[in-house]
Image 1 (tube, rainbow, N blue to C red):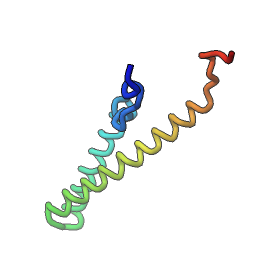
Image 2 (image 1 turned 180 degrees about the vertical axis):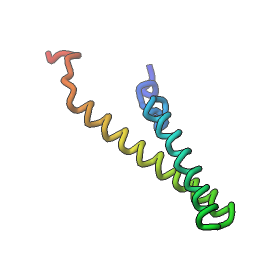
Image 3 (image 1 turned 30 degrees about the vertical axis):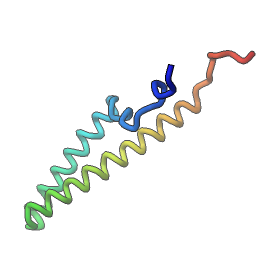
Image 4 (image 1 turned 180 degrees about the horizontal axis):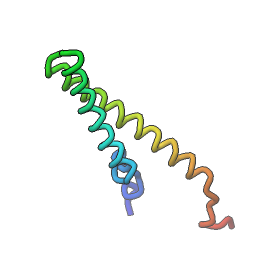
Length: 86
């Protein structure tokens, strides 16, 4: 059996409910930012799209970081019962 089968993918955190929610919330935040920049500030569509993408990426990265930190903290609190000590 290869060791590769047991390594977690960097995309693994997106294959959960929290990952899905982070992408959807990031998309909503990016679209909202783009609309606000375009209508309130009156900038071009290009600037609005670029800022929307930046906000999307920042939001997803922040939520992923929180998700990984929370999961790591939870794993450290769990008492391991198997395999038992010799």
